[in-house]
Image 1 (cartoon, rainbow, N blue to C red):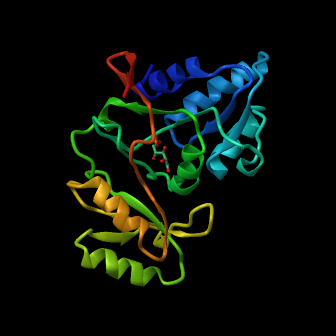
Image 2: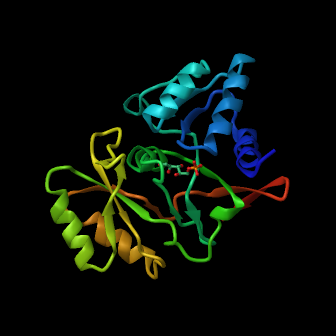
Length: 221
Ligand SMILES: O=C[C@H](O)[C@H](O)[C@H](O)COP(=O)(O)O
């Protein structure tokens, strides 16, 4: 079994009947969602909030009952992937472009678990480009402001065209290398007009499950 599958499937042990679950996006939490689908077929009673069109499609194909985030007061447990996680459980997310919905869902959750393979654990965030979701309108100006801050921004493209998020926005990836002060950068991006959301998730998860060496390690902060 590969590391992503080990981590993804381990997280299902935290799921209990009656829960409202947040379902993340990506190739690691895919394994969690498939397992939850099997449990639902065998009688597990849960409702789930999705974080992307891709996850909605997967969950529906597995018969997992979905509910809109606007119809729930809170989410009991969200399980999601991450692109980098440091020792303080700060993370970069959004490699798959789902960071905006993922952050809304995570912040509405009582408990958040990230499932990752061992390559995602880092000493310092920033090797993975930090995704920033921006409005199309004026995105060139946001790009200039980010460049002026020395953050090496680039509009994400697919087949030569700007990548579109589920909300119809663009993604600007910041090629920073090493993020020296994540909290300061978080505040800077939060304050920038035209930025919808960004992929720095600071102190959001309580548990990280890491697939490595044929096992899944459960880390708590
Ligand atoms: O936008 C995508 C999400 O933040 C993913 O959870 C993240 O990119 C990790 O994805 P994967 O498990 O496919 O590496």
